[in-house]
Length: 264
Length: 264
View 1 (cartoon, rainbow over the protein chains, first blue to last red):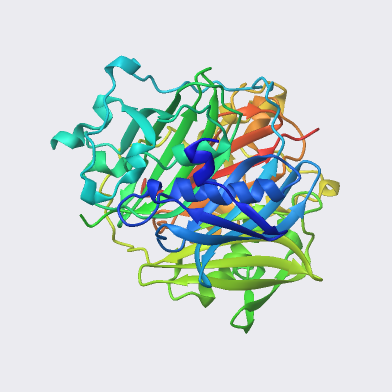
View 2: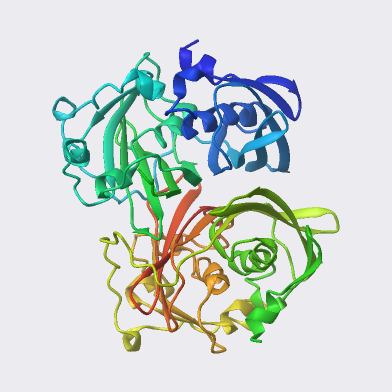
């Protein structure tokens, strides 16, 4: 079992209750990363579902949660032959932190797309991509030690005080500990990049309010390519769109989030 | 009060219960249109919220619902200075039909975008756009009588048996009964076009499983422009992305849905 699989374990207490232990290795400052938290909650949802794959996940982030024990409460909304729908809530000491609605279904690993004309944005070669500088230990950005991100240099020019002016963020993604990508890794990948608003001049913690992502195919082994962009920064809000492509060149996930521009 | 405002009324019974009467003027065949149903539920959510604008709405469509009386049950998940979060469920006779998670906030009508570089897709002039042929009465497509849609001809060539091969659908949109657009009209607009998969060779009823839309600005009076596209049709699933622009040329809403390809 990898460290990630262990850190996302959900232990069944009964049909609607799973115990989890939120790992301090996935922190972004004080709170934990939203993608990691979705992965933990999805473990409980899929374990209890008649279908194995979380094809749609919509999350409302009510408040940041620090590491430690917590509970995932489930409520089955629909059980169908094609799809099941579940509500899951992350709670600790009677307080709610995240609310998600999930549709599970059974994807065919051999499915050939009927239409996939939209091309992937071009990425530089892996060898020409850059790592972010290691975070300062006091920043408590422990997530950085779990994921291996190699950035398209043009999408992180904000690091050197020269933001591109467009909301964007693009990187190759894999786990530091070797592990083939799966739906839980993808839940992490859709929220693992610095906010796209950094390259449009934003700074500081940009809290996600809502994030919805669709699993469109089961990923092939190897690097994932994570392509982030945005359409509008206005009135203190921005959208971040993420596409995840696998090493076989297939679109495996689509994500969009609505977040607040940081005050930093 | 317009017919639409009347058809979307939600009458407060108590803090967590609103009575609604689902109008048979918004049917797409037997069931009611999902955008209309979101508008009804949002009336209850915003009436009970400290903030007026539904900036994010995520809906899970559990099962189709025919016209008639129903109830919206609310649960407040968070009450914040910037945003409030609410869960709402559409129920009838103890059965659940739609589950939504909504974030409300207060948008500034005067907000000037900090960044909005992405251009709107070009549309032909209104005079060069086409109406769909009137539906057969026995099809019970009553929604068509409420909305005035003028289509980019190239996006509905499937009507004449010559689909473009790409998932797409583009139209100007307004209510038949004169009414300035507002967030509830936009909820209708993001699910009012024929499924984008029709132009990629799909046919028949394409049930929405999940739809999430963001209200990015308050719309100016006049026509809305509704631009639909998709990224992937695979394994019986397709995504539909909608952008709504107002008459002042501003992006006012973004929507994405995951739906099943029809068997027609």
